[in-house]
Length: 481
Picture 1 (tube, rainbow, N blue to C red):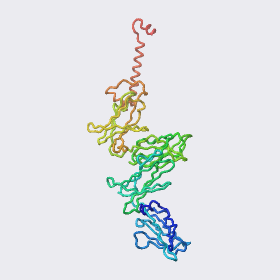
Picture 2 (cartoon, rainbow, N blue to C red; picture 1 turned 60 degrees about the horizontal axis):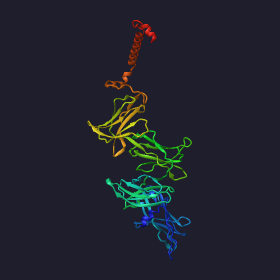
Picture 3 (cartoon, one colour; picture 1 turned 90 degrees about the vertical axis):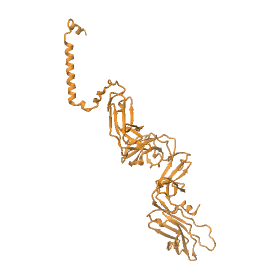
Picture 4 (cartoon, rainbow, N blue to C red; picture 1 turned 120 degrees about the vertical axis):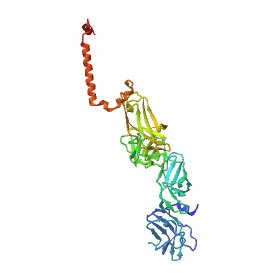
């Protein structure tokens, strides 16, 4: 292991004094950085140098520079020097040593201090494969990725026991790079939180901004919670999105994960009723990155182990593709209970899948592969036989198999009305002209009055016929009847 890598793995730690001092030489000083040796670009920091009492001067050198970086008089009690960097920049990054001058001469130089500046490159991504939630004793692979073609990554474990490692990047298409690192076996006795930085090998002390933190969760077997969204499974691009975790177990906290992504921030559980717990996960305005499959977990504050996962919830983002499919219904939008109904979704652009969604339903939309017919891509959603449960407003969307969670614009809404109670008798089959029954103009006040007048006339004729004489014995027959 090189001295440079050793220094990077011990970030922010003081380099101790040598316990054995050679005869006739002064002990080398201790060097460290405050608040640490990994500093964001533009931030201030201080390099400290600790020597022996009676020091007259402290000197700071940077490797690769022929002249001393700085000289400072000692601070009382004349055994320490401080060197300030008010605004950290890439030229300030590198390896430093310090010395002190005593009445008998200069000391040995200190061990090296590696000073790193971060934020020079864009932050990489950090995810866990196949998921950030792992069973106890299982393994997971961490994935660092960069779109800037950085050829090295530093992966750091932030919680105790802390550790770091340097990873060589692999080239990917379009100038992207990545590095994979296996972690495990996982145990619930530790909290596992990671970050990664990227850098280029010719500037090892100039790093990217840190990735978002990734916490690995250890899954247990306690009762799984449920996960839902009040907005329904289909949300429009730009719409606010909130996911809710629920459980009949009194969990103190909930965690949300997105398949193939990072573990999302945890939320404390609240108890709306005794024995119940829930938590809200507001995800903000929806973008394409919110589309995906989610699960949630419940946990207790006194344990680092999490529950079994909830059933998956797919979040679909509408409005990502510009096309707007059309939605029609056969035989019509008003049908009797027990009839067969088909909803037809069509699009003029190439789409591989169509989805049918019912407004207000928590169930995932129906999916069908598209078929090409008469210049259109289409799918037929059959409902046979319909009941009152099919009443509602429907919309359809199109999608591509390569982006299964991103949808087109929504079709115009189609309201389906099912008359008659579910399972009740159905009216006689309608002929071709019965499609006019679906038009609201048939039920105007004028038409209702006409139907009422016709009914009264028929009732009067019936009474007259009943009271008319029926020939010989007609009155007696009528009385006997």
